[in-house]
Image (tube, rainbow, N blue to C red; front, top):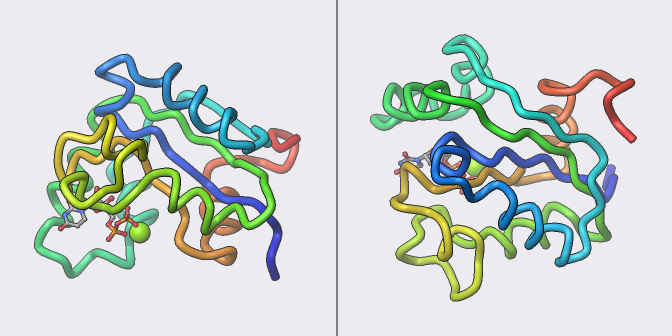
Length: 139
Ligand code: UDP
Ligand code: MG
């Protein structure tokens, strides 16, 4: 079911480098409404569960280490066609391949440390949003 919502994380590298304000400005200027948002930090168990689909990949241990090393900004965003439009706004996983003006082109350092997460389907957006937020934190 299409909900017009997606889930994002501004990853530890984006927080460390002070890019939170600029990235949120770009997201809201692109027409996304903030449904939920918080600064939080994932435990190793959280990151292993969140990224379980990648657990057999060679980069998995590095991904868990990276995603748990500091705070993230987790958020649920709303817009028509949210999942697809947000993936367009963030750009390709590897910033070297990301289109000009995308968040990853502007702020990501590498394919691993790529500044921002965006859900890849409506189903995953709902699962990922519920992983981070209780119903009373969603507006
Ligand atoms: N990642 C990595 N190396 C890779 C591919 C992915 O370190 O070769 C990391 C990167 O942080 C990426 C995350 O794992 O954002 C999840 O990978 P996915 O393929 O789902 O990319 P995304 O959906 O984030 O664009
Ligand atoms: Mg993905």
